[in-house]
Length: 636
Image 1 (cartoon, one colour):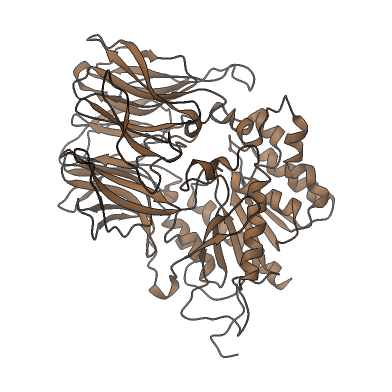
Image 2 (cartoon, one colour):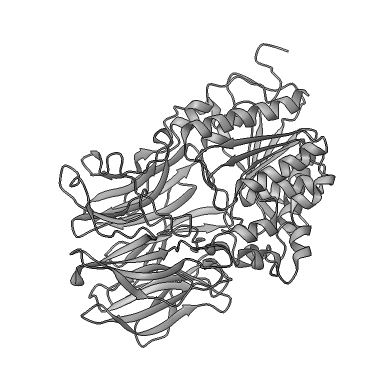
């Protein structure tokens, strides 16, 4: 072997865990408004603090919320909808107390300190909109009670009216289990909003309602516009007297128009899907430009497409966009702002011209300077599986200074996204490069139940969680080995949350993996149902096909903890102490059980971390631990 021929998985790489963690910004909401772009960003280097930022076309970037202010909502535990800009002010939810604040915007930044609008220690806010004519905000609110226990007093979700003059906030709309997307018509006379009830998740059955707003702000004459009955609505937006929204009535999310006293009309028929799973508030797959057009971002069989839709003529003009994944899009005053990534661009905030083309990157999520030789565009795979074809993105090992032994196949990491109602975004991801630059292949698997392939693909998982997704994962590993993409003796599986659940079930029911890594993965479904929060209280009923009361044996059969005696695969578990979605007891239980039977297991706990790690030191340590674990198995 020459000096550049080295064992796969042991290549030297300049992409360190510390560099990946230090620059790993997470972007929340993005909003184009008044000729500027605003966004929130979670900073691992500041222990997850989330300031709101502003960019202007002159190129200046201003931090509007200095430390210790942090814009983050915890409604539904996952949050989103943490700020909005309207009427010359920034309105935001402060992470520390979950109350609403306002700061007047100036050319230099924002007034400090912000003015407090609510002081309610038991109530969290999100997804607010300005009702300028009535000098108030309308927002989603979630009120928690001190006596809350699972099966006892659950949080109360509603839409609230929050006056800007400091007078008392009050409930505006209640009666459903959940609310989202309150949107007021331009003339202030109508309020549109989404609502749904347990046991459903928003992508299962969110309904769209519209009611009349009286001069005093009360709501009456509420009518259901669309949704429910096995369909779901998403992202209502007003344009004049018309309300536009996404509805998957025909199995894929398309754009619909509604006007008062008329039935809704479908106005797009896309080869793709505009619907996004409403895990967090304020997601957007389309944006109105104000000149009778809508900028669309939709997904066609896992691939992101961009188009400009003419609301008057119905004409659809494809746009040449370099982005392979888009999280949100916003348009105002000729500015199109989005959160996206590309094969050669990490997650970023970008501004693009209305007709598409080369965008201006105004904020990068990663500070890593990556040489082109470390970047290899992914190969899209269609993988045969018992549940039907499943899809994945394979990222090959890439390092200009190293290559594997002649004729050898690399080790492979099969990565399982969370949710499970979600998908793996295509693009330049520092965590993926951390491994591929060291000689690992990486496969992002969109197993059955993933979004971006239409409702039928997503519904494959209903009643089959822990079976269909596991079969897809095993099929992907076997396909990669048979295709020469992976060494069959060195295939690993990793996932977080629901992805961790599938990884655990994969090693509990098969022996195809050399090792597994679970980030806060679900090990015990009965335990999860006892401790889960209100938002996901009915989720397992859909995913498993029965309630735990009706069929506890089903919940046991789909739990990795039940199958500990069958697990022989080495496992590393990474868990936050403050996780309210998957408490640490889940990971501890399976770690203790495996130790008792002599299976190699490593358990690592991170103080103060919740569901999804936010701190740079945690992200760095997890990457190093995961790499060391895999390498020890390659040589052990």
